[in-house]
Length: 283
Ligand code: HXC
Ligand code: NAP
Image 1: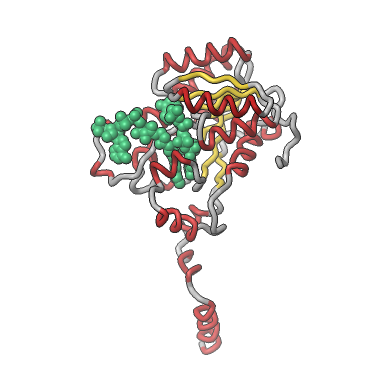
Image 2 (image 1 turned 90 degrees about the horizontal axis):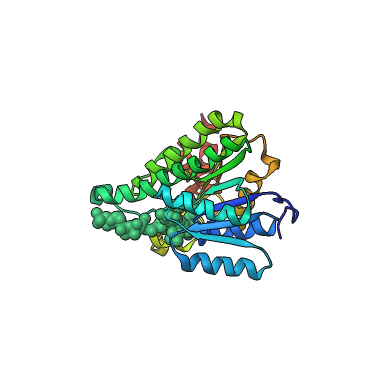
């Protein structure tokens, strides 16, 4: 059950990159249920068709276009095709991504190029395509970028993704200031671990890694797709109209758990704390 009314996103014409699978698909479904007009795009027609079929079965209109965000000409064509059918897009969710775990010294230059092209350049190209239109038409708009909690800390073993997401975070904050006066908001969400096929196939291939993720998370669980899609709905909505340049973390406190000097003490048993108390009383 959504916490929002069914017309919460009425008037929003939303384009979601990578909207055929995982978190993008969940956002597409949630936005549709909340009265948004949704279009999705990515490389694989099968996933776009499947998600569109599922959304239409729920009684909502949805459009899709095949498009590889690495190519600006494909972006321009896809946007033109979608706008012909839906009218002007006013909300862009840059959600498409590519990622894998590897020791950095094992990566080829092409492996770096591929992730940077999808995550950083794809987001830049899409933001430019929509931003230029919105400025020209003086219509305003919203850009929501999906980053990660390692956008500001960096992370070992996912370095192409880390450098790309850091760039997307910088883009979010830069455009917030530059395009804010043109009525364009730029915001970001930094998710912690959410179990999707794409993320798990590429990054969490063993139960052991998942167990570690859960046990170190202060909430002792993974995030749910409802939690992230409702946050996305809020951030693109007019209720968030004064939120600009902000990145909202949704990770159960996971990244802070790794950051605090004494956080590892969470693993200590009660006897440790009792022992500390009696040591203090003896001082
Ligand atoms: C090392 C790899 C690799 C891997 C590919 N490459 N996978 N290197 N380890 N696991 C190298 C290839 O060898 C090749 O270099 C280059 O990368 C390009 O590979 P292709 O397979 O030709 O690329 P392409 O078909 O364009 O596919 C892109 C992709 C793929 C990124 C590699 O994984 C993909 O399509 N991913 C989309 C879905 C996804 O990744 N979702 C996860 C998002 S989750 P050479 O030199 O050999 O030619 C996320 C955050 C999760 O981002 C955080 C979890 C908590
Ligand atoms: P996902 O299902 O694998 O989503 C990635 C999407 O990007 C796919 O739909 C894929 O579709 C699309 N895509 C990849 N390359 C593309 C390209 N070149 N052009 C167009 N579309 C492309 O994984 P997810 O977990 O839902 O991830 C969604 C977003 O959340 C990503 O930005 C990811 O970095 C972020 N995130 C996820 C987690 C998590 O735990 N799940 C954590 C932090 C951040 P096609 O294959 O059809 O192109």
